[in-house]
Length: 60
Image (cartoon, rainbow, N blue to C red; front, side):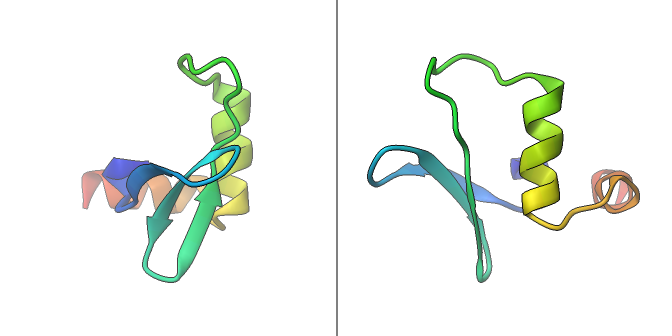
């Protein structure tokens, strides 16, 4: 997420979250371990970031 311009994670309340500009994305990770690919895809979908956009931002 940091590679995509997000800051954090921050913790206020039950779940950590990350921020990019006006966008705040919750990172549900109750076990505090590495997240899986499926959860990462759902988080990026919540953030409105497509696969093509992720590739473009990474290779900027």
